[in-house]
Image (cartoon, rainbow, N blue to C red; front, side, top):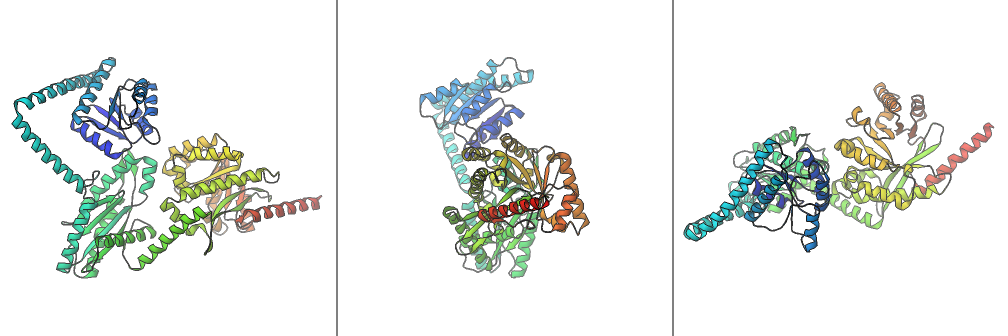
Length: 627
């Protein structure tokens, strides 16, 4: 069977062409943009590619240029299928770049297939040096083309000779189309589960039946944990594979008469009906289903040769005889689901009226955060990074929120919410921008021109497709020495996608930017990636530093990290140093730098600079005294 690659950033276009071509006997592979298409084609070359023009990451024109310049791919036919055509020059450009056909959307299915097979057949004639197996496929393609042409002639003849039969067939097709439209209206295209519209209808029915028979029902709101990270790192195609598999697993957890629906994204809803009249017993029944769901979701997934582990948070709302609307019930189950996430994820929570207050507080905090971005209420504080001679080598930039009513808000109270809402992206940009501006000011002073400033980078920031370009643009605009900017990445961020991390780090390293591995030792540390990553520094997490002078295990961990880093030529810094005993231990074990309250708490820039001057004066007077 012939292998076809379809490239389009719109799911409805992908699934339409997939259904059309699969129904005509082709094997179809999907890609959301040109870069993804190139990766897939180089791994498993198709026999024809159909591509849109306007797409994110890499558009159709760029893909076509890469395609025709690749020795492995250039002979494979390339069809442009787009709705963006406005001028004849667009088609001329595509054809001049090597496109074999230029088809406009929308196109009748029969016309598309006829043109499609025609291009495939021409591709056969143009590549006579194929293998025997490929020749067989190409012979089949030529036969398919002949069959298509014969079929079109036969259809025209039948229209004249058998008008009555055609009308009957047309009526049957219309009925089939109506049934399909009806199905699409009430069922999710990806998972074939009931969609929101059908869910609401069934939930209204269940509420009415519960009130009539006085028994309990329950609504389960299911949300996958960290699904966005999978989409960002592996792509939407892998995310879709996970959603399909999750839907199958959820169906195995359902009782007879229960309803499972997909709301959208990674959200699923279950309606449990005919539970016990006793509320405690009904809660036990609902909890039993939740346990099955969580266990099923926890099993490993094999997604396109990629091993993945997932978990889920479930919110539960019981109902019986209450005057709930469907929207109120969904809202309460949703609130309970967020409480499950706040409790650590991979668990369930039942709705409690007190949850409403917590949700309202969360919503108020989000509103305040959005206002804080507009009103420039954030501040950067700097904490010194010092060697064992008391010399300040740099500082870590730490964000604080100067709230107009609450005063100075520490990051632990608002950073988790910014990551959930995506606000971490604009806030992270502000931190980077402000730090670069401060580096530029310090570079103008001989006393501070070599200070390195460490900036924490969130996973959302790092995975953003424009991250590298944005950092380079800031360095160029502020005209700072790249070696004075150090980006701190966490282990978990890197392990999300090691290949992507290496690529982006190397791109910035080529400009001179430094990299530090933050909180080292707290995640799933791996020696294999340490040898591959272009790291300049390891930062030992303060949880080890805090107890290393009292706990032999922590001391051994610290010694091991320092020894390993020294052997790899990587600088080591310890954070959370609060006592001279800790500093002496670190010095004895050849830790390069220290950071912590022993030297200074995080300070606003003016106080930080005053502290620097005081330390410089003290060191100078000490030196003169020795002389």
